[in-house]
Image 1 (cartoon, rainbow, N blue to C red):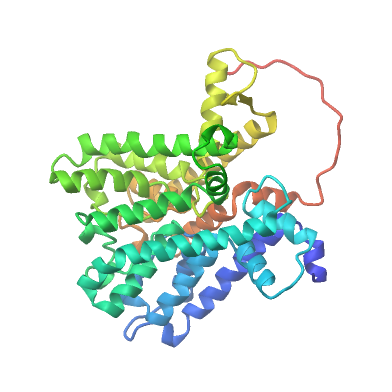
Image 2: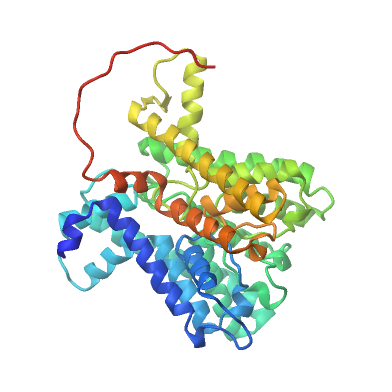
Length: 443
């Protein structure tokens, strides 16, 4: 362990780790053989793309298929993989493979990076994450390969299958379909059941978190043995998939053929919570439909997953806290277990941070670009929640607006609380003194 690493806190290591990979990826994308002939890529474009890839967002200012060469696409895919699994997870995995001893500081950093409950068994958990990730991504590619090979040929079809499988599992939303029509995402596969269900399955499995998957593989159908967090994650995920899908089916996609209507409703409900793919033209949705997608994007995936957003557990804690207030109960609780005050305070802080970033960024971009507020809020929620869905505004934005989105993507991936803890590292004092208490009316 170097002298610098010893002086840094776990939060600071995570922040610097992501920043280093983003900067390195930007430089690789600036290489002449990373860009197709006839394309011009400024450093801010490469920085935006690298940030979007490492932060597994999917927003792009240059179409992935038509701007970047095979090398450039491979760099983007590598950045997605590192960002999805987590920079620290990859670093620890490399250290383990090379036979290096993992220090207690590195274990503690790993614990914070993947939201593990304890340091013990963290190296074993890292191995589990690697195995699950590789297995599911290869399985997803195998399922989609026949469909892509029929469309693009064997060699290209296999590459497309692997690229989209990794992008889906990491909840990144990058696609190579611009070879047909720029920024078209998966709209040409709207009626393909295999591609739709495979991508949805990869998004959900990547989004529920590795700790939840460990719980499922350890306890299988014995749901009562699951940790409270796993139960909450699975319950909220199911709720946030089914209810919006019903709305989309009856109110947004009523003019579609039945098969595309069912697939489209489920797909948009799943992808809105941090994946970034789309199989319908989002500009055709009503303002109510777009508002629902913004809410889904802000909630995002689950802790310790490849997904971003406030997280399903944060949403659940806020909801349970409100219910406890309505019922005059002292504590929020789930499945016979009460939550401590720190959890509730953290959830409220995260909500406020996301609202400030999402609304503030949207207002500034709307003012600078002269664009509609709803469209700008859609882009900022997509950025800060690391989703990647867009109404087509992002490629048209100016330098200031792009830098705002870059900042939002970075904060959304490393986590707001991680940034706060990093900034306050070394300044947190154990002062137990309490100020005088006074009542104040709210509501």
